[in-house]
Amino acid sequence: MAEPGPAILVTRPAGQAAGLCRALAERGYRVFHQPLLELEALEDVPPSQRRQLLDLDNYQHVIFISANAVRHGMERIADYWPQLPVGLNWYAVGEATATLLTEYGVQVCAPGEAMNSEGLLALESLQSVAGERALIVRGEGGRSLLREELARRGARVDELACYRRKCPHLGPGELARQLEKSGIQLILISSGEGLLNLQALLSPQETTKFSHISLVVPSPRVAAMAHKAGFDRVITAGNASDPAMLRALEEWTSSSGD
Image (cartoon, rainbow, N blue to C red; front, top):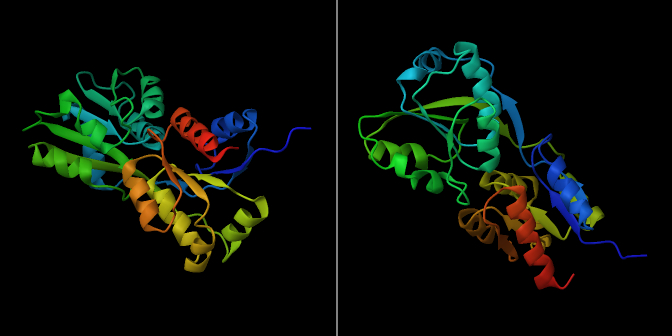
């Protein structure tokens, strides 16, 4: 009988982890799932955002910063535009976001491997935007780099927040007990906010206790956050997609000798 593989914790939100968990199980890992983000649609549309939706055809650039932004944002847009306006440039931060967006019949610009704000800002079509209007569809909060840089380039930038991210509610010590009981050796972190929630759900003493656990993170920025938080074993994936996470995990497996 083959020995059980390393224990991996997947932290994607509920309803978005099945493919990654299945791929890990097929590779022989012991897979556990504990979301580090909860997503909640924003029901109310304030007057300012109603005006943005009504004026959608006056924008030159519409940017979706996540697959969740497409799920919640396009539903909201459809309430005002049963038939989407033509002549807009549609953008997606990554492959999964682009795939969802193309289902609405639009041609999508995406940054390829660099699935982040920096990758979007490097696209040729977003270099000379002075005097143009851009709408960023996103969740509440998060990074401001995209908005600030497009504004610096002379664009008029609006943001459409259509969902919020929350830290899951776990009792004191509950996550630590999960990690210990399951013998977790590696945690897959999908975003900087997921890492912050990991820290929030572990006491300082627990963070120190589990600092030996390896983390796979989606970018150098999140890697720097992880090191600052006290985690010593951090592997940086190419991005947050399932294939990139799996490639980084293979690197970890090879280097650890498992």
